[in-house]
Length: 208
Image (cartoon, rainbow, N blue to C red; front, side, top):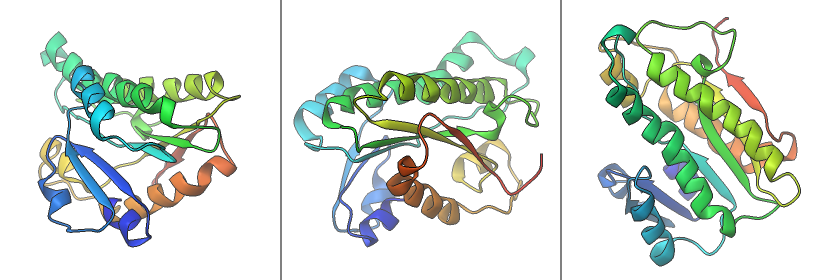
């Protein structure tokens, strides 16, 4: 996504705990910052010093996935997933709200596993339930900011061949590659709020 936005002349603020892959792109119009969004104090410090004056698009793409039978998980396991997927997402959205307006768009990356009625998989209790929280939070924030903005939508992705997926499911290969879905997310972030607000939209080429 960083590469696509840069190639299309958008100015990008890219936050990640590990910014080496971003810096390796050598892309113009990209500011990379090593920030843990689950650390509210560090995030606020970044915002006070280095954040943009105006935010047109915020894509909440940070995520953590644990593949472990529920009976073996601990409270710490659940907290570590929620700390990134729910609390971190909330932290950065809250921090950047003053820099957004009625034309801004927040895109939360949820999961097909976080939507009621879809196929569920053993080992993903912490991850999928956290994405369920993201889906409902999306609807709540859209309602709360419907008069002032930003618009808030979520894309519930199916399995995508990412580093996180490979670490959680070694040897698993899926048909959707990261580059293809990145372009879709980026284009939706720029235009989707013209058609949707408060929606959790499934993005999967498999059924159900």
